[in-house]
Image (cartoon, rainbow, N blue to C red; front, side):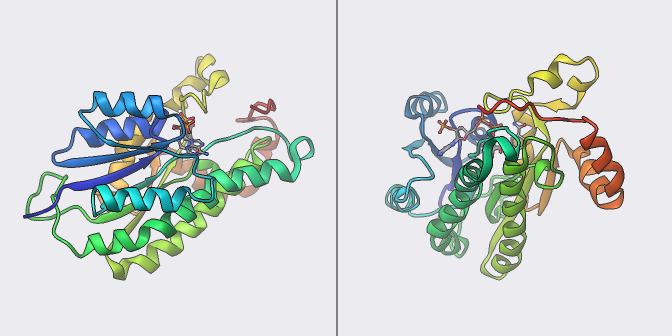
Length: 275
Ligand SMILES: NC(=O)c1ccc[n+]([C@@H]2O[C@H](COP(=O)([O-])OP(=O)(O)OC[C@H]3O[C@@H](n4cnc5c(N)ncnc54)[C@H](OP(=O)(O)O)[C@@H]3O)[C@@H](O)[C@H]2O)c1
């Protein structure tokens, strides 16, 4: 008999991760594993969703990846979807915040994802070779075993006061492209999601939401959750969310001096305050 579809979501205690967990919970035969630091939030969400494995962990801790891998192996014995979503941003120019701010972004937005994939890849590969349930409504075609890395449109276009954040997301995108090519022959799909401005706790987009026109480019975590399912079980390689954000990335490549001038001139400036 096909095993249930086991899905692990990091950063499930708020925002995009929480919305993704809610969307996955509505699919048939899914077993959820929720990861973040705030255990009470994860436990409340698990209870609301009718049960989930909760792992309270700081993903930057040395032992977090092995602890998570041991728990998933022990409780489920398989893993079909890893959503690397947890992340953070602390604004500030390089002159104000220096190397320390770059290093802390890399730890949480890049190193943590790489280390978690390292710990879970053997289980993902093994699960790719076993029968499993489909969550795309087509019983004859099981969803692929997948990793989804949640990067950012800031991983294509850098803005002032967000250089450290952008650097960590550029790194995640570059690494994901390689991983996509490497894992194809092992049955593990690697999808990339690049959100634009999404109103969440960590990324409130307060100034943009206050503007009559600028609020139109701010979207919701639920929209990104749909993109994450498309990039994971849906096997799409790369998805901007909302989808029209691809224009920003294309403009950066095709019209670099125009984009550079617009950004340096104050368009989409990130607030300078360090959170
Ligand atoms: N919102 C946007 O505009 C936007 C745009 C582009 C990309 N993104 C990306 O989307 C992802 C989700 O962000 P969000 O907007 O949903 O923000 P959010 O609501 O602040 O959620 C961030 C999540 O990451 C978790 N997290 C942060 N540091 C962690 C750590 N050291 N260990 C474990 N978990 C940690 C947080 O949980 P705990 O605090 O409980 O640990 C929380 O669940 C991030 O990777 C972000 O870079 C967001």
